[in-house]
Amino acid sequence: MAKFDFSENIKLLNDAMTGGAKGVPFVAQMHEFAMRESGIPGDQFYTDAKKFVRGTLEISERFGFDTPSFIWDVYNVEAQALGCSFVTFEDMAPAIENVSPLVSCEADIGKLKAPDPHSSGRMPMVFEIMHEMKTQAGMIPAPCFCAPFTLASHVMTFENLIVQIKQNPGFVHSLMNFLVDEVIAPYMNALVSEFPEIVAVEGSDAVASLPFITQDMLEEFALQPLERLQKQVTRPALCDNWWGDSYAPDLPEFWAQKRRATPGYLKVQDPDLYKLGVQPVIDYASEHNLPIVLGVDNNVFQNGTETEIRMRIHEYMEAIESVGKGALYLCSLSAVTPAENVRIAIEACNDFRAGDRPWAGQRSAGTPEARGETGKKITAIKAVKTEAVDKSQDTPEELILDDIFDAVIDADDVDTADLVKEALKKDINVHTILNDALIAAMDEIGDDFADGTIFVPEMLMSARAMKAGLEVVRPILTDTGEPVKGVVMLATVQGDVHDIGKNLVGMMLEGAGYEVIDLGVNKKPEEILERANEINPDVVGLSALLTTSMPSMQKTVNLFKKVGSKYPVIVGGAPVTEEFAEAIKADGYGENAPRAVEAVHQLIAEKVKINAAVPARASA
Ligand code: B1M
View 1 (cartoon, rainbow, N blue to C red):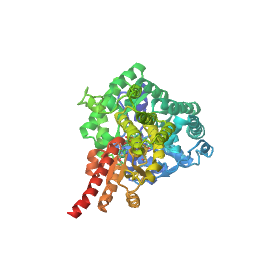
View 2: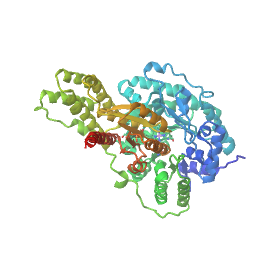
View 3: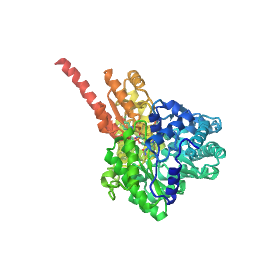
View 4: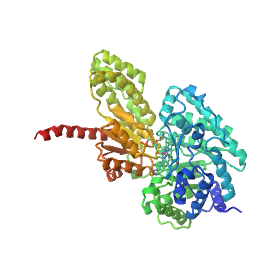
């Protein structure tokens, strides 16, 4: 007899997905929450299968989760086994640090060594977790894998992956084939042969979400490699966590793509679900006779009031009930999610099932307030780009500046560099080229990105083109002793390896004429201060994407203030709000990359004002 018994709820979950259940079950991604509540430090919890399973089962039982988490730190296992740099933390889940990518060019693929599922990295630990789950709880969870696109971004960095997709797609296909054929499929098949009871394997693929990639990229570089995997794994290989439904230019097509990744159900989660509302999901699911999985995100459990948590859960459970089959998903209960809020969430699920439904019929998702200001459709870019501009009255100088501007907008790095050279040959002032063509184009790109009219890849590629133009003018600016507008030092704070947003901020700052020194990710407060003292930047920029790493952002700002550092600090990242920035006494805040540039402009302008005022005061 197993020590922990979740069999009834596992049956409820299985029945719910086929329409035969009485109530709506919930599943939770709660490994990090279980780590904290069990008091097991992260560096042990995620490396010792027995501790992981004991902690997960005990906390699941203590808090009354329907079923224990089937999920561990899913994004890291294959990358670590391939040799990517793996970091553990005491107080949060481990991560892969993209310090030096394993693959930069096609030839590097040949240097990758296929992992052995029984001996490489923590792959053997996963076998042990499965074994422990089986003996302690009589259950065999679906093993998790890191889907090919996200794994490729670990192996070669997100930015390089996008650039190569645009410039050398064959190389990316070869890498994807290697990752599917030599890494993920053998690993999953080894688990299936050890545990034949496995019914399916489940992938996660956060990086392959909109608007970080486009829907076309998703099709060719995320979905098709997944389908290749599906053909090779001896059990259904599912993958259900692409975000970005609210950005999809073609939502039914996006959901059709999702269904190819999870043929048996449709999963939609916050923040997209909150923006879109439940009705489109209900309609689609009813039309296609599909169960739905609706996800409430961490921010609600982290920052929501009791009523907000309860209402969101009831609204989504009611939607699932109206479809007749499906489950609720509680996303990313983390090491800093208040235990009380988790209790409230679980109680809300139980109350709903018991018929205690004070908000029956009420909806807040999908309202204009829930949609916020973002979410404009990508089609708008086409309108911008195809708008005909009458250039017949332009001077030759204006014409070439327009061409440079267009080349940056069209993300053509070769054309941009050539046109800048041509403009210089024609004696056009270097500042005019910089300000009226290169920086002006990036301003427009920044606005389009902030509006949601273009996606990350377009912005990234335009930033590259801008950089190519900048390389041409830089030596001239240096020769003339022209000072750069200012130096900005960037870092993602300790415990956090998210860098896509920070890198975009860096590109936009370069695009606006600043020199950017990027320290990378997972940087301790002391290291950030030490490097600032070496570099002497005009502004320090900190990025955080996790609620668990926000305290580290606060510590860094505190340290700067404590030592009376002269460097102004701006902060940003998805969970970072203006209120938080004010509360931790940061000097500036950027909601997104263009706003971060504005914050830097403002701080530098203030600095210039102060510097100008100092001699005046001294002489008074
Ligand atoms: Co992670 N992840 N992730 N993840 N991931 C989030 C952030 C999450 C919201 C997903 C979720 O579960 N709902 C969640 C955080 C929940 C929370 O705490 N609030 C989460 C989690 C929990 C995790 C892990 C623990 C694993 C997991 O369970 N999912 C793990 C943690 C690793 C670690 O850091 N210790 C993890 C890992 C990963 C990947 C490695 C797989 C990958 C990161 C790859 C990389 O960055 N190289 C990843 C990704 C891609 C995401 C999502 C899908 C996207 C984040 C992103 O890149 N956005 C995200 C869910 C989502 O958003 N749908 C999620 C695109 C980027 C352009 O936006 O970074 O917000 P953003 O940057 C914006 C602004 O915020 C701002 O400007 C940028 C451009 O406009 N900005 C600044 C950013 N920095 C700024 C600095 C400034 C000013 C503005 O001044 C200096």
